[in-house]
Image 1 (cartoon, rainbow, N blue to C red):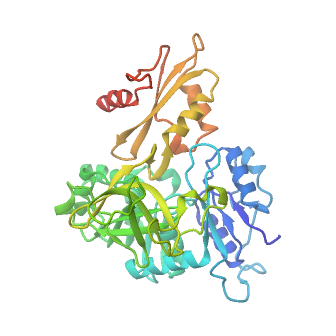
Image 2: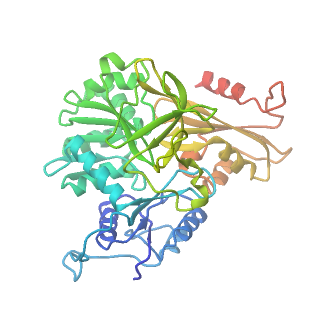
Image 3: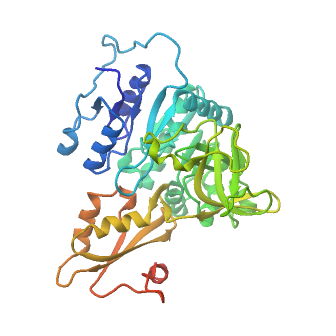
Length: 453
């Protein structure tokens, strides 16, 4: 094989992780997109990353995806070269992982991470949570998700053990409890959805998980009711709110005092070592006291920029005193309180988080409007105790079209990632509600759905 980047098309499994480890040993950069993306999106990503091969460890694969696999890597234990590693030191500036943002339509952005950035993050994670030999960490996130940088790659780098959640059992609370009983773990990091599933089930069964010392929630805000039940579920654990973006990796951490903080917005916490953050107001000024602004952050673990440099407008210098460091405009509105605490206020655009993945509701609307029988579309995010939010779509169809929700779901499945597909669809024949200025009244649509939930 040539030495160009690899595209890796794989469901999460031990064999898939072995394949990525092989790429690391061979010092190959690799792109790991979500295998559930539409075929056209996958092809576009592999082309943009200039992958010389697309490889897979999976024996059975959908025919459309099989056609993308140029070579299937099979290295059996003990076979010639299976334990070989290249000679020479790693180049810390060489690209290793290529992750993707959770783009709702078109091509997600490709986020390249250097060897040095990943190593620095792995060292921090080990220092904070002791991921070395004799320690076990639960991996709940999909293989393409940036949470795996801690769950899997930092843990393996430090000599720890990774316990994988089968993707087909990720919403089966009974299976999750059985896994934790059979394979006790010291550390759990997951989106709040996992903790919602476990606490809901534990409320009925009274089950507890005693082995876990560190419980980390990240990717979205955890619901107060779920948070309040975590100490009973994990009686020996410390609890942490971890904040970050795919582009910067983790940047803030807060150890949670559940008893005193369960009814308040959780602070972002303290910046990780080497992290600098700013709050920037609408007029471009840097906020130095209490108030709200967009969070700009720079970390030792961040990407040098998107693979497509024309999209790098989110990477900027310090607005007041350029110092050569590149800050990432997170798009998150953050409030600094008089006591210095930082809390997340929301987004400054139409992005929301669903199961820890960012989705732009306007882009989902554009995908719906691409259907020939849709005249109007409005997509709103409804709070959901497990997923963080769920999407509701209100559509006006063409007269006598016969358009139904099943056809809409099929249409969306070919254009959107799973998190971007609306959970509920309302199809009407008349105009959607309007505001006094003639715009579609999304607030009205959202209020009706929220009341009905």
